[in-house]
Length: 144
Image (cartoon, rainbow, N blue to C red; front, side, top):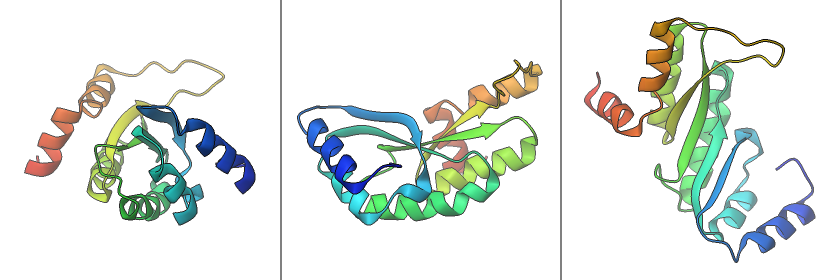
């Protein structure tokens, strides 16, 4: 999305013949505009992934989801990567907020490029729980 309008239009035109399109790269939410949402609406999208890597990313995520919903997208299309691994209570709160905004959250344990972090079992279980849509729906809709 960080390119010219002309380039985005060419990409959308190229994708029009494809089915089940998945944008799994974690689109930057603040780059979603009504014009881009309209271009996406003209495609056969199965999954559209957005990024919510830190608490400050919730506001742009909410704005982009509102734009995408106006263009006809639903939670079944909208997913969000959520980086976790520092504060479990804050991370769970953010995951729940992502669900409330209208995306299916997907927790990912933070891994820097320079080294491999090893997480305790509780973090691995937490990440697993927050990467299973049926469990997430159950937790968020029943308030558990």
